Each structure stands twice: as C-alpha cells, then as structure tokens.
Length: 262
Length: 357
Image 1 (cartoon, rainbow over the protein chains, first blue to last red):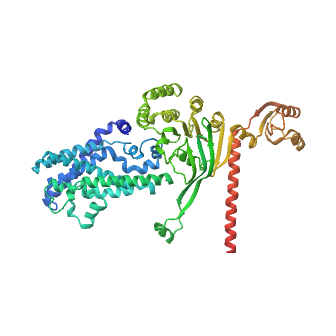
Image 2 (image 1 turned 120 degrees about the vertical axis):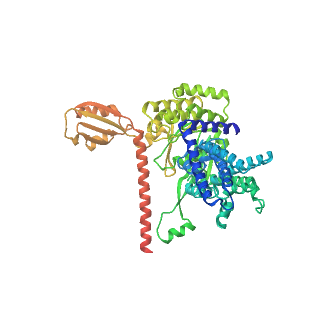
Image 3 (image 1 turned 135 degrees about the vertical axis):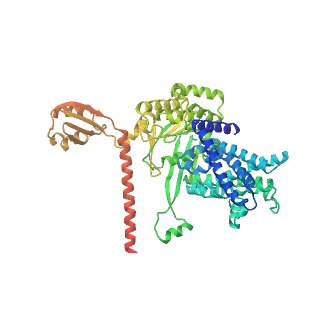
C-alpha cells in the first residue's frame, strides 16, 4: 500500500509539474491574497486597538495558525471538495477497478503547490507574532504546536471529505462544501470567535468544528486558556474523531454509489 | 465451471419520479417518490476461458451496466454473478487483480504525465514484478508501437494512440480477463486494424478471455466468434457470429448494372412466378441498377446470374454477402416494435381502466 501511495503521489506531482509556469504565479498570488486579508485586519485594529481583547499580533497568530493547517491540507488534498466532478466525469469508476483502496486513490490523485505559498506565508506570520508577543516555547510546546498544525489540516480535510461525500447520494455536493467553508474562511480564519453570538460559536465548535483549527489551540499559546476547560487541548482528538467519522461516511457512500451508480 | 457465470442477474436503479407540481413536490422533499428502472433484467449467460465474445446492443440496452457489474463497479440488485470464482463487487480488490478494463470513452491514465509514467504508477498499484514489467513492456512496444509515444503525455496522444496506451495499461498486470467497452470508438481505419490484431493475438497467444462491447460490426466480424445481443436488459441472441446471419434474415443480394440509362422497369421480367422459381425475396429498380435479394439456400448464385443475363442487358454484376450490420439492425428494429406494441397496449389498458372506473 505504501509503494502504491508513493507511486500515485509521484504521478500527481508530475501532473502538476506539467504546468510549471503556474508555480511562481500561484505562490506570488497567495502572498498578495493573504497580505490583503491581514492588511484589512491591521487597518481595523489600528482604529479599534483590539478585537474582543485580542491585539493585532494575537490575530496574526490566529490567522496564520489557520493558514498553516489550511496550506498543508491544500498541498495534498485540495481536490477532495471536487469529489462530485470525479463522479460526474467517470474518473471515480477507475478507482473501483484497481486493487488499492478507492479512498487512498482519490486522496493521492492530485497535489497543489498553492498550499506551499500558504505554508510559507504562515511561517512568516507566526514568526512575526512569536517575536512581537515575546513568546518563549519549550521544545515540548513546539512539538505540541506541530501536532496542532497537523490536526488543523486534518480537521479541514475531514470536514471537507465528509461534506463532499454527499455527492454519493445526491450527485452534487460542491454547494454544500462551499457553504460550509464560509464558516472557515469567513469566520474562524481571522476573528476570535468569542466576539460572535452563541449560535455562531456553537456552529463552529460543534456542527462544523472549524474553530479547532486555530481559535481553541491559540487560546493556550496566547495565554488566554483560562475558563475554557479542555477545549484548547482538544484539537488532535477532534481531528481523529472527524477522520474516523469521515472514513465511515465515505464507506457508506461507496456502498450507495455501487448500488446506484449515480 | 465457466470462467464467467451470470445467472438471473438483475440491476435496478431508482430515479426520482417526474415532477407533478404543487403540494406534491413539496411533500416529496420529505418522502421522496421514485420510479424503478430495471436496466438489466434476469440476464443469464456464461463465458468459457479463452473465448472472445462480442457484446452488442443499442444505447441504453444494459451493456454498460452489465460490464460495470462484471468489473465490480456496481453491485447487482439480485442474481448470481461469479468471475473466475470471485464476486466482483464483494471481493473487489482480489477481483481487480485478475481483470483488465478499458473504457473507450474515458482514459484510465493520468492525463498530464508521459504514458510511461502512468504505466509505472500502475506497476506499483498492481505490484507487478520487474521481470513481468519488462516482458510486457517489450510486448507493448513490439505490438502496439508503444515506444513511438511513451514519453508523450496522454492529453497529447491521438485517439488511436490513447487506446493503445489504455490497452497496455489494462494488460500490464497479466489479467485473466479483459473487458473492453467500445475499444475502437472514434478510431481511424488503420488504427482500428492494429487494435483488432492486438486483441486477437492477446486472446490467442496469452489465452486472455475477452468480452468487448462495440457499435462497430467490423469488430464483431473480424474478432468475435460469439456474439451476445442485449436489449432492454435481456438477451435477444447468444451464439456463434456466423449463425447470426443465418438465423436472422440470411438473405444475400445481387446488384446488376444494366446498359442504357433510365430503363423502364419491365415488371414481367421478374414476375411472381419467376421470383418464386429463383427464390427472389425483393426486387428494386433504381435507374440502371437492379438490386435482387435472394435466399442462398433456395437458389444457386450462378442460376440467378444466368437468368438475369437472359433477360437483361447486363453490364456489371456484384454479389453481396449478408451484412451483419443489417442483421443486427433488423433485430434492434424488431425489438423496438415489440416495445412500441407493449407500451401501446399498456396505454390502452390504462385508458380502458379510466373509462370503466
């Protein structure tokens, strides 16, 4: 299985390399895009000084922790939300006639270097925040940070996969994925969620727990964890639970697909 | 036991019922209504090891659905299905190792990378040992001229080359059975010939059992000793390709070009008595061309030619064999007529019901 995965990933990388000219443009684009978003926050905080008790560098940390997880997810799994296209175009059928897990084949079908830009930006942003906030992490804390970044990527991956799998039943899932990701891009990405009302907080904590990508773990790193109980430390557990759930739904979806061929 | 065993195979699809408008549509959000469409209807057949079978049928007849069940993509609704002792969908991964599949409409290869890189990825996926990899690559280079385009990305290949690349991909892991879904679709005459030769050789030399679907009667005539014709999910014919011609129609045609333009059709030349004597089924006049169709079991061609030469100023003659295309067309047409009568009858019954009710 390991060799098969490596070979499929290699094919995906080679596919992407066929369009090398996009690489530079893509990475530059990511810098511009993220710069613009952060610029807006900077202007906003220049006026109001802080957002729900969070200063600019707190927000910078929050944003870039999200971006690190998101970028990691994008490098390997950006196409996961496009499951419906695979089904529609018949590409999905070929996963079923090969002696390797269809999920593994789907996950390793594409890579996207846009995510590299995201990861580079996030490293810069986190370094800046680390410096300005005067943080001094122990090796153990660095390790925990790495685990949080990976969990963040896993949370986004599994939520996307979970929603994209709806295509097995309905044939269409991209509107669902797009709507859900609004809670990621539009809410948890750059705002500390305690500034929002209870319903929205519940959505991004329970229903679509994107807040475990950055908000909750940030509370610990920024010394604001008091009063939140275990929530700041739950990201890896949430990630594992979501991955298991997504895997289960995928299997159910596959059975459905094989019986309807929709 | 046969290599492929299919007994009473049924595949039904649920489709959302047609809209009716008003409250019923809203109610259906909560309780969906479906109509059941039976794509494959109690299909039974078996294929022995080493056979090369053609699978024919009009669009929507159930060919693809059957192929998808045989390859493990779809789960049957009911019935028995076994391919080399395995259930394709339930034992999907084991099954995948013993079959090769080509979909003419859709490549199995990575679109943007050189063909050879796609094959390398498949080598890893199937765990093909190095010596078999080398042996097969040599074979594909020799018989499919793979070396001519193996470093070109699939998206830049001609359709004929793409089919060759896909055939190589389907055979890389030495499968026992090869499923070819429209392997010559859109391919030019020369490339078609090359593909057919290769398929024939693979079947003969390597004992690979082949089931292929096609709309090209040339594929059937040149490749398949046996043909199965399917429509509305059931088999209309299953037997030797040769026998197909005799069972259905079985008429040959004699085309005669006569001297002189715009000759008046002298009906008495082929009067009912003459037709009866020579077993002539039909006569067509078209300017200076006369087309006779006749039953070769009743009349020797030579007699008919002699009779024609006596009566007409013959300039040129051509005897045409039964075109399998014609035979198949008449089977499809026949099936369509039955369908029309069936649904007409159903509508009539429904109408009657409404009157009395």
